[in-house]
Image 1 (cartoon, rainbow, N blue to C red):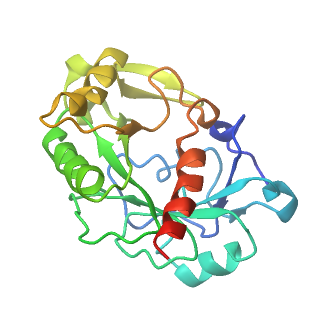
Image 2: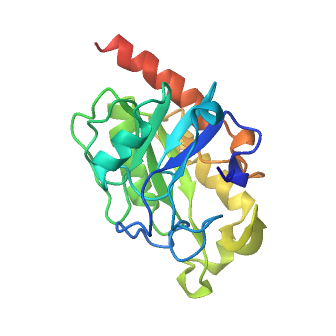
Length: 231
């Protein structure tokens, strides 16, 4: 299996059982449009040997609610796995990461115990929505929220040129938010009244490698604990 360079140094391996582009079509998708690290003409699924001692990240690209039967069959044998989706359907045999604003912000009432964390795609123009997501999922329901800072392939799509710069991340170059803006946004929820602690970000302000982040690894094991507590 081709190794995703973003995962080097982490305890995570990929599984993307589907082929072709993802029909959810989130804006500025890193997976569609020939921007993934490999072609999409064949499934990407770790072997049992590759997955041994690792956590399998199912559908970091594509969506686990698309061709569900294919996804479930291809990942059934993995003892440790979590599923990624932008569709509010969470009945999977394991923890689930939910992208809550693939297009429009979705606030799920009574989120289930296996909701590992909520991913919010953040930029300078949707901070009000980010506030709502943090208030609803983290402050109200205790579900971790992880901010994924938007990267733009097209300069015309950049919401605020003062906040972004063009630079390389692992393989590709994008318009990415400047680090001082990232740090300022991540301090936002500690300044509210009352403050909301524990908002996380995907990667770090200084590295895009999963091995330097570890959010998914920590939150996977934490979600198993939370799921056990609610049985």
